[in-house]
Length: 191
Length: 191
Image 1 (spheres, chains in turn green, purple):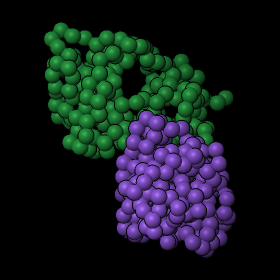
Image 2 (cartoon, chains in turn blue, cyan):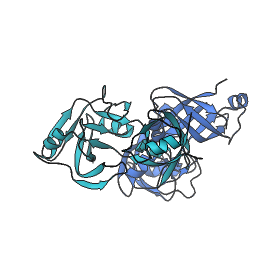
Image 3 (cartoon, chains in turn cyan, green):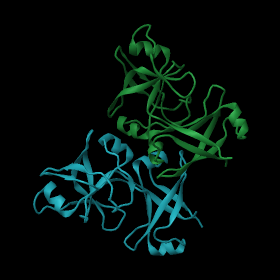
Image 4 (cartoon, one colour):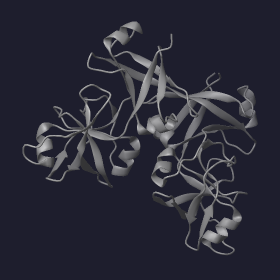
């Protein structure tokens, strides 16, 4: 049986700590839901911020809510070149050793000293699906994408949680390289 | 024995027909060599042009000389989104069914009605190396890249000619997705 999972492209986005939301948007302000995302509870917010790098600024960057413990900025390698920063490929939440950046909102600005990274591609699975496919949290698998630029992503980490919906997250560079457009499914290959 | 080939990232560039060089840079003008490239006879020119898409303009685009029979514009999917065009993935020289674009130089401008595409990744081999590896022109192989974003490109076409130097050509989106930086070698996997 083929292990097929929908592939979602994560464009550049920011997760903000509560105190940074207040600095950027004003005392007592919270994020406004624009639309809910595939991962339960996560939403794209109406609010936007600018990322100011040493080289250039990227304007109107999406904020994904709700607030998190620490502010983190997830960009592509292409964005990194535009901004003039050189962040590592990291898993979400693991921001040690990452560079910082200036974030500008309508009410103020914040310069974080770390938190900018390129998101390591990963697969979200529910415990039920993971069990059915004989996979566990932290497993490393391959993911095959069929398109006009077919490829196999190696070294894809599996994340299992009841809070997840099954989906693969790749960034815009990876989506472009794999020729992803429209609804795309990837096939998990166990190494 | 492992079949290792150096991986070169092709940034966006243009090949110009002789008549378009004259329109863009002036009557009787030719391209000036800035530096020679890995493929024998091919060079990066000092001259640059702007690509004017329906959405945005990309300035200072590299021209690769010498002049070719037909003008062609090789961009990444990221560039395509910036410009506002939707070109297919194609092999060099195969420009039927591709969109056109406006090209602007210091002496004039040209609007081509076709020629914009995303280059299909490919491997250049000399006949000697191809023979040693039991590969022929037009063969489709896989190419494995080891990095912090390891992946296997599927559907990579082999091009064999005495005019070539052994190298893999991928675009900037593919290089970013594969975590390529510095000198990178890919390993050919025969399907």
